[in-house]
Image (cartoon, rainbow, N blue to C red; front, side, top):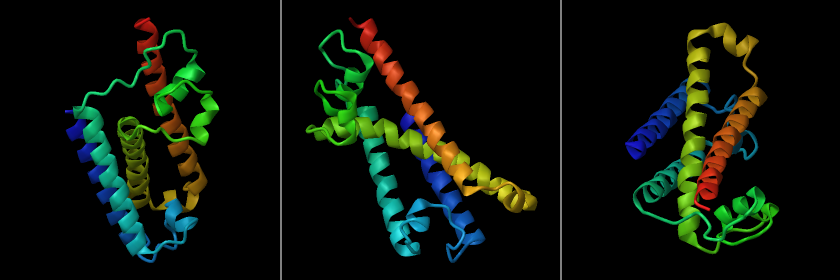
Length: 178
């Protein structure tokens, strides 16, 4: 159920975003996607990258949903920072190590990404779909209220909140198993 719902929502919200972007800014001059605003991408490379990212996200979601994997550490007594690093890397480490290290175990990485990317895509889909509805049905919204940095901030803070809830839930489960 979770897999079907998230996959459907991700695909639907990306389709709405594609349609609205093509309709509102066919030349991408007003597009807010950082791949366009910072990377300067045109439609073709943008579509290739987004399609590959969405496909990998759905693949990782499938793996993390339907294949069992023991992501929690067996070592007891880890503080949250060490636990956070273990969840990412599969070994005890300082929490800052997740900023410059990747896990050696590709299965661990896929299971982790299978939660993190779909939740980020799903939340981004909510924000961008609401944004496009407001732009489409309230003409004054774009000129009076729309601020790209505010959209980025909402997406960033919302995603961090969702991910924090995920990590705290895993940590709570880990502590209960001690």
